[in-house]
Image (cartoon, rainbow, N blue to C red; front, side, top):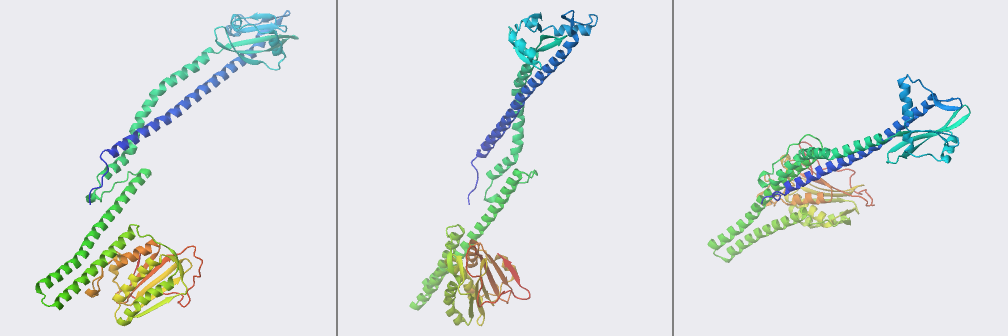
Length: 506
C-alpha cells in the first residue's frame, strides 16, 4: 500500500511561519493599541493642563477686585504689607499684567507683559464693552506661550482695561516630555510583547505541531494512531477531533480495501483453479471427443462465472468511485417493474414458484430507471434462487406522498439474525441452509445498497429462518406532482414475520 507521509520538514516550516505571523499580528495589534492610547493620553493631558490653566486664571481674575481699589481717583493695590500671603498674591498677579484706562492709556504694565507687546486701543475698547472677559493665547518675543485673560474692570463709575497673563511653557513642556518618554519606551514594550507573543503562539500551536507530527508518521501500519484532546474545548480540540475522525475513516477504508483484495483474490482464484483443474484432467485422462467436450463445457461455465464476478466488481467499483452517475428522470416505475418481472415468469413456472406483482397504474417517480431495474433484478434473482418449489415471490410498487416504495418478499429459508448486519457487505455469503450450487459471488446486495444510497433512500430487511425475507425500499421524491395513491394495493402491507424475526435498517 505504500506510506502516506508529508514532505519532511514542510509541516515544521509551515508552523514556524504561522508562529511568526501570529507573533507579528500580536505585536502589530498591541502597537496600534499602545500608539492609540499614547496619542489619546497626550491629547487628554493637553486638555487637562489647559483646563487647569483656565481655572488658575479664573482664580487670579477673581482675586483682582479684592486687591485693586480706587483711592483718591486712582487705582491702587490695597493689601497688608505684613501679610506674606497677600504680598505673594499681589506679586504673582503683577508678574504679567497690563492695566489701562478706557482710552488705552497704560496705568501699569509689568515687564512680563511688556514682552508680549502693547494692546491696540481698538482691542481694549472691545474688551471693556464685552460682557465677559476673554482668554487668548499669546507668545513673547522668544516664542514662549502665554494664556492671557482680558476684560473690563469697573470701580467708582470708571472703566478700566485689565489683562493678566499666565506662562504655560512648563505645562506644554510637561506634556511633550511625557509623550516623548512614552514613545521612547514603546519599542521596549513592543519587544517584550513580541517575546511573550512568541512563546504564547508556540504554546497555542503545540497541538497543531502534534497533529502535523502525527500526520507525518501515518502509514498503513499505524492507522490506529489517535491524538488526545488538550481540553480547551476550542478550535484546536475540534481540529484534533477531526483528525481522529479522519484516521478512523482511513483505518476503516484500508481495512475494507484489504478485505476486498483478499476476497476478490479468493473469488477470482476459485474459478481459475477450477478451469485449470478441468483442463488438466481433460489433458491427462480424456480419451474420447465427448470427454474433451464435457471438460471444455465445464471450464467455460467457470470462465463465465469468472467473467460475471469481474463484471460485478467493475460495476460496483465504478458506482462507489462516482464514475457511475445517476441519470434521473420521470418514469413509470410500475411499467418498468412489470417488464422486469416478465423476464422471471418462465423461470418461476419451471420451478413451480408463484410470482405476483402488485403495483399502481401508473406509478410515476424520478429515478434512474437502469439502476433501479438492476437493483430489482438482484433482489428478484435472490428471491427466485432461494425460494423452494411451491413457494411465492411478491413484488409491490406504490407511490406515496414523498417517496417511492418498492418491496420484494419471498417465503424462502430466511436469513438468521446474526447475518443481517452484514448482508450488504461485498462477498458476504450465508452458507448454512443453502445448496452449494446456489452460492453467488456476494456482490448483488452490495450493489443494491449503493443504488438505494445513491437515490438518498433507505432499505429495511425483515427476515427470520424458515419464514422468508422481505426487502422494503423507500426512495425519496420531491417536487413530483403525481397522484400518491396506489389503486389495487392494500392500505398497508408488511412482510414482517410473527415470532422470532429480525429487522435491519440500512
